[in-house]
Amino acid sequence: MTSTIESSGDPMEKSKFAFELLATSRRARRGRLTTPHSVVETPVFMPVGTQGTMKGIIPEQLLAMDCRILLCNTYHLGHRPGHEIVRDAGGIHKMMNWPRSILTDSGGFQMVSLSKLMTLDEEGVRFESPHTKEITNLPPEECIRVQQNLGADIMMQLDHVVHTLTTGPIVEEAMERSIRWLDRCEEAHTKDEQTIFPIVQGGLNLELRKRCSEEMARRAQVGIAIGGLSGGEDKSSFWRVVAACCDWLPPHLPRYVMGVGFAVDLVVCSLLGADMFDCVFPTRTARFGTALVRRGGQLHLKQQRFAHDYRPIDDRCECHSCKTYTRAYIYSNIAKETVACHIVSVHNLHHQLQLMKDVREAIAEGSEEAFLNEFLNEYYEGGSVPGWIHDAAAHMGYSLKQTRGEIDERKHKANHEDVVELKRERKVI
Ligand SMILES: [Zn+2]
Image (cartoon, rainbow, N blue to C red):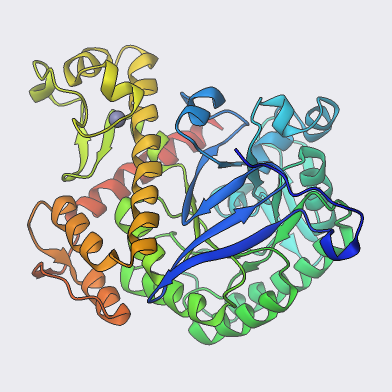
């Protein structure tokens, strides 16, 4: 695999990063992002390895799936094993034996998920360590120092995250502060082999989003993120914010929509012009024995009906789990052994990566309208498709063959499952 654009010493060729658009079709983009560690084909889904390890997966398995980039959580790595230890071990790539691209988040998202333990002012964020109860200061400069110690290709700026459903002056304040914090992050940034992605904030307010998109685009060097979504907002607001930001952001920057991982969201956002996504959903849901499939979206393998089902999870899937194990085997192990969780995690990540590969092919061929119809037909099993998808499709100029339904019951169920597990995880922390 092609891996590096070496610096030749010529300042014009100094950047170790590049983004190239290979094809566009309507709003959708088929691109290629080059980092110091790998070439990433976009649109791309980035699996999340919380503490430098993917729950139930080892890096070799991700390589076998041709995963090119993954995300690691700075907040968690900062506590265990600690960013200085990662630096002394030769950086995160070496420490976790992952030769390809890595993106680290800023720890900002944890402000929302651990907000009982946090205070924030212009200087930065202050956390109480859930492990030691010590107070940790995280100004933007420290956020970059920590991420430089970790050594990921892409670092995220420290931003002021407010809950998606928050309204009032705080949304604008947080957006303005995020711009000032980006400037401080850039001041502290000293390593050419790492880049910082700014994060567009502004809640569900399109005027704020527009201002923030313009300010961040002016400062962005390699790519840019759209943050503050996937926090429980209605789907109609979600896709409209993504669509609007993609319209405002310049075409030469890859656009990373943070926290998106449901198959249908990945497909719609890719067609709206987004290029990068991440979510813990595929591995988190695997821990409940839920496998992601094209036909119907999900299979809940804890159900009794799988006890004598000797088919693979998905007979069209090429992953190691589907070539090797049956639904009955997974069912028999699911509540007792971690091996079942591992088998389902491998399948779920493969499913997401394969889906993105199919999306990329459809965009490159200009056949994404047919792809969208075929995908929705399978996902909703020939039934009605939620109204927000019809609206997004109409906005993009695609016509859907399916009838319009108002509520995506499957999604509500999945969201509920996620929330239940998040609560459990917080107790563990
Ligand atoms: Zn599979």
